[in-house]
Amino acid sequence: MKSITGNEAVDAAIDRVFAGEQLDEDDYLALYDEPVADLTAGADHVRTHLADEGVTVRGLGYVTRGICSQDCGFCAYSARHDTDVEQHGVVPPELLEEAAKRAEEKGAERFNVVSTRRGADSELRTDEWREVLTAIELIREETDLNVDACLGFLEADEAEKLAAEDVQHYVHMVETSPRYFEEITSTHSFEDRLETLRVAKDAGIDLCSGIIVGMGETPADRIAAALELREVGIDVFSLNVLSPAQGTPVAEKVGDSPDITREGILKTLALVRFIHPDVRIDTNTARAPITREEFLESGGNSLQLGDMIHYEDYPVNEA
Ligand code: SF4
Image (cartoon, rainbow, N blue to C red; front, side, top):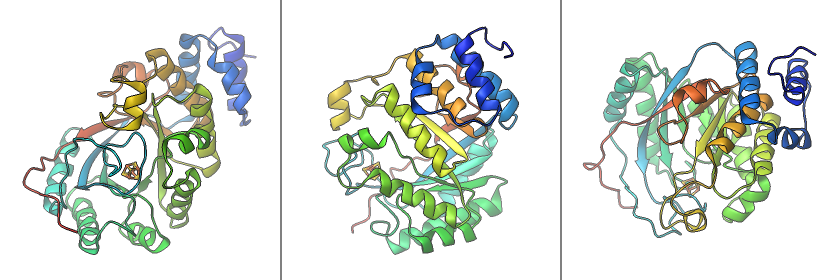
C-alpha cells in the first residue's frame, strides 16, 4: 500500500477507492474517527486524481419565492412554520437573464433557476412554468452559461420540457438520510425525492443533489445520505451548511448556529469525496464556517455564488 497520508486506515481506504471498490457505511463510520487532517489530505488526493480538474462556479436566481405546502423542518418557505421570509412573485425572465449575466461576469459557468415550491405540477402555475422556460431559453441564448433548474418535484413530461431546453442539471436535494428525513418532514418521503431524481435522469438531465448538515443529524446520517446518492448516480454533490431560519422546528432544535463543528464539516466533505470520487462537490463557502481554500483542499471543486436579484418590485401573485 502506497503511503499518501501516513495514516494506515485512510491510505487503505484510498487504495480501495482507486480500485473502484464500494466501501460500506461501517467502513465510512470507522474512517470518520480518523484525524481530520489525514481525511482531508486523502480526499484532496482522490479529487486530484479522479475528479475533473479545475473549479466550477455556479450562480443562482429565484424565478419565484413563495410559501410551500410542505413541512420540511429546516425550510423557511414552509407554510407550516412561522417565519419572516422574503417572498416574491414570478420575476420577468429578463431579470433572470441579467442576474445570469452578472454571475457570468463573476466567473460562473452554470446558473441555477430556482423556485421554492413543492413542485411544478402542483404549485408552480402555468404562467410561472412558461416564465421559467422563457428565462432558461433567454439565458442560454444570451450567455455561455450552462443552465440548471431547481423547481421541486418533477413529472416526466416536465422533465422532458426541461431536457428540450438543454437544462444541464436538475437540482433536487435529499437533505439528509432516509432515517432523519422522517423526523424532519412528514408531507413527503425520502423516496419521493429519489423518484424526482430518477425522473430527471430518465429524461437525460444530469443530477445535482446533496444534503444540509447541521440539522441535528448524526455523522451516520450524512454518510447514509451520500451512499443513497451514489446508488442513484449523481453528477454534482451539493454540501450545504444549515443557516437556521428562526421559526422553523430545526432552528428551535439547534438554535442560532448549525449543529456541526468546523471539523465535522471537513470530515463530512472528505468522506463525501471518498464516496463520490469523480463528481463535482459544491458548497457556498459564504455560509459555511470554512474558507474557500479549506473547501478546495479537502475534496471540494465547485463553488456557489449567492442570489443576485432584488425582488421588492415583484409582489407575490394571488393564487
Ligand atoms: S418542499 Fe422544498 S420549498 Fe417546500 S418546504 Fe420542503 S424544502 Fe421548502
